[in-house]
Length: 91
Image 1 (tube, rainbow, N blue to C red):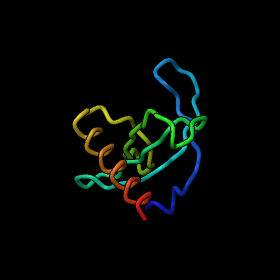
Image 2 (image 1 turned 135 degrees about the vertical axis):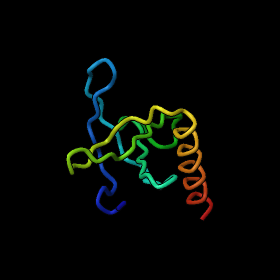
Image 3 (image 1 turned 90 degrees about the horizontal axis):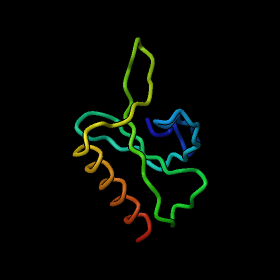
Image 4 (image 1 turned 45 degrees about the vertical axis):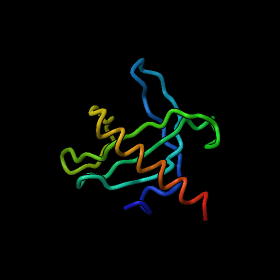
């Protein structure tokens, strides 16, 4: 699944209707759902960046990204992404 998305940039619409470009930094599976992590594209990964967690949902057979509303799930996925990033840095 992660190869399909690769390391790429996406434009998301924020709650104010503004287009914001994000960089996809990781894809993780959590409790049977695929989640993608993004950071604002203008920031480097070393900076303190807001990580945006989105989930893949199927609607009418089409995959779409949707914001994760459940804070507990978002936190768990965020922690997985951070652990994986730290493990990569240690290598």
